[in-house]
Image (cartoon, rainbow, N blue to C red):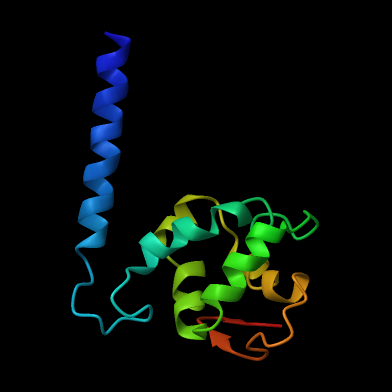
Amino acid sequence: MEASMKNMCLLGFLVVLVIAGLGEVNGSGECGKANPDMEAFKLAPCASAAQDEHASVSGSCCAAVKKLGQNPRCLCAVMLSNTAKSSGVKPEVAMTIPKRCNIADRPVGYQCGAYTLP
């Protein structure tokens, strides 16, 4: 019974991911063909750093932010995505991660919704 419940939960999660992935198929979004909600999973190593400005930022988090930050529109969309919000990300804290990672070529001053990247 416990195994079937786990399988049902996994199946439900996969259905949600597929539905979320179908939202943007024309490739004209902030992240090209990728859905920002799906791209948000790449920032999983940043979970604690995006909730607490005093938490340390891991190397894997910085690498993911640097890669997504090559497209500031995509990074912004990911940080403000439903996936990020439902994971407890605080946008005002998440916006500080590129600076906390000492990313030299970060998009300083980029306007991201109501927030500006420091």
